[in-house]
Amino acid sequence: MEKVDGVGGFFFRAKDTAKLAKWYEDNLGVKGVPSDYDTPPWRTNAGTTVFAPFKEDTDYFGDMKNQWMINFRVKDMDAMVEQLRANGVEVKPYPEETPNGRFAHLNDPEGNPIELWEPGGKDPG
Image (tube, rainbow, N blue to C red):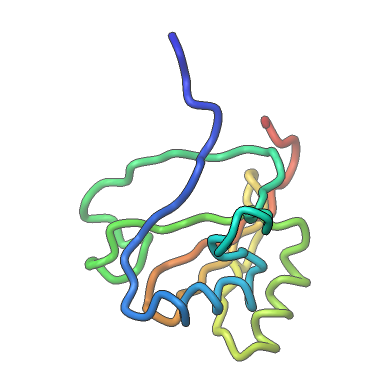
């Protein structure tokens, strides 16, 4: 069976696309789409990616209107949380590490849920 070999993009609607793209770059280091072919796009490090549909009534994403939540892998949760808070972003780290690692939740300026994940133990990727 032929399989995809990774996520090539994540596309979603936004009220103010330029402002939201800048927020992601300023707070999480996610570069926006290049405006020319000479500028390299944002590249991720190879690693585990989880693709998991949740039950339609889950409260894990927060507000029930949210149909998705993106999860970003981070190398240093403490440094990322400190950076976000210094930028005035409310972020809620899980109080305890799980067998899968450490997690934190936040929302972008348009209310979209984001989960940060610092893998723990042996990363199966």
